Amino acid sequence: MNTYQNPIFSGFYPDPSICRVGEDYYMVTSSFVYFPGLPIFHSRDLVHWEQIGHGISSPDQLDYKNCETSLGLWAPTIRYHEGTFYIINTFVSEGREARRDNYIITAKNPAGPWSKACFIEGADGIDSSLFFDRDGRMWYTGNFISEEALYEGHHGIYLCELNPDTFQFKGKRTIIWDGKKSAGKWIEAPHLYYENGYYYLVVAEGGTFTNHSVMMARCKTIDGDYEVCPRNPVVTHRHLSLMSPISVVGHGDLVQTQTGEWWMVLLGVRPYDGYGAPHFNLGRETFLIPVRWESDGWIRVNNDNGMVNPKEQKPNLPAYLPKPCFFTDNFECSTLHLRWNTIHPFTKPCYSLTERPGFLRIHLIPEVLHEICTPAFIGRRQQHTSFRMQTAMEFAPASPAEEAGLALVQDDRYHYTFTLTQRDGENCLLVTEVRNHVRTCLQIVPVRQNGRIYLTVAASDTGYHFYYGFDDQQFLPVYENADPTLLSSLVNEGFTGAYLGMYVSSNHIDSSNYADFDWVVYETDARW
Image (cartoon, rainbow, N blue to C red):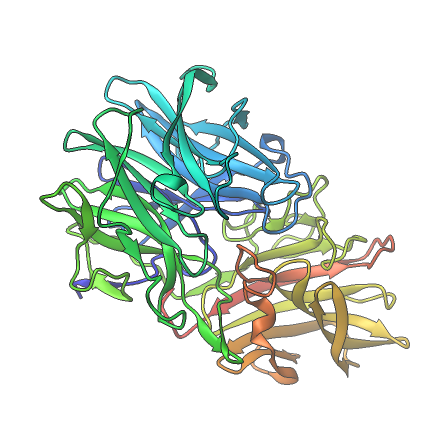
């Protein structure tokens, strides 16, 4: 087949940034409070990608500061220059429009290891980006909140040169696009390119939901008065229903292939009708669209309708090995698979892959999932609206405070847990929901058999479903058709998507107990 299916990254992979080195392509996306952070991917055909590492993989690289879920690592940019890879990123803490610190990490190999974060003094705003000019000079672009505040969302883009050795500002700071020039709201995500004798500035505008879009401006000089594209927005679905198959597109980055084609990676969502309103549980995903330069010097989407479509013609590049639509982990390695994340880095690891070889052992700790903390949760992204995830667990609860099993997480305020615990001296399975920090029991089922238990969570058009068994082919229902909108990104006006994974807790009480997980399988009848 000569077509590919969008999105190219299913699940919570927002704010994509891309660069090419020869015949190799590298991409990074936002990760907010999840650790390791800033997932990095490699491809040779722009369609099939393999994760190769993380930009932030060690707690000593960056202090996460116990941020709430929609803060943390926002909108990175990846670039390559003279043998070195650079990622510039904004770390947001203390509120969405409060503390914003911009930093740079570097690596010779994009798989890592990456350097410690070097913070840029005086670099405020979000969505910082790097540009290496033809003369070798290094430039910073970022967003700012206008002090004039002429209207809601009055933001803009500023430029400043960076010292390539210290990564600190040098020279004057210049505003190159003030939102009032185009009456644009929430201008952010700037990326600079040089093409056809112009410096082109590509930005996102309109916020991260209904009016999201990609805009352009250009100038003959890098720090001059940028001319706004008369055809803006160059990419948007803001004129479509929010229930369109792909919605809320924006935040683009451009790349030129070795064959001369131009492509844009950008984010979007795939909504569903949840009780009369559009919802999306997979978060903001990464899409790929063809673009071309027109005779007027501006880009347009290079397809028949100018939209981000579910299906497009493949790039003119050699085929690359596709990925399977299932995932299994037998925990036989000494390190966790790249797809697993925790919520913040652990200051002291509570899990081990070596204490019982072939098992993931997670020790119970007092922290709980419904508080802002670092709970004993190890999860992966939900990547499909229909899926099944199963694990084989061995756990003997010693008190009603101890629990272990699976969790489906939007954030600390909204999630489901499916755990083995103890009530009245007997083991039981407990399904709970947390809605705005309030934990409610949905179902309790006694489990009189000790030893290994198989836990399964699944999703379909009607919601989430919870099953157990005493072998991997037994699916005894505990609770079915749990409200899917609980894990929608809209319930908390958040920026992340749903996560699925193993969770244990002793609920504010010290414990020496642990749970062993033998394997995990995630499968779907959809493509990866």
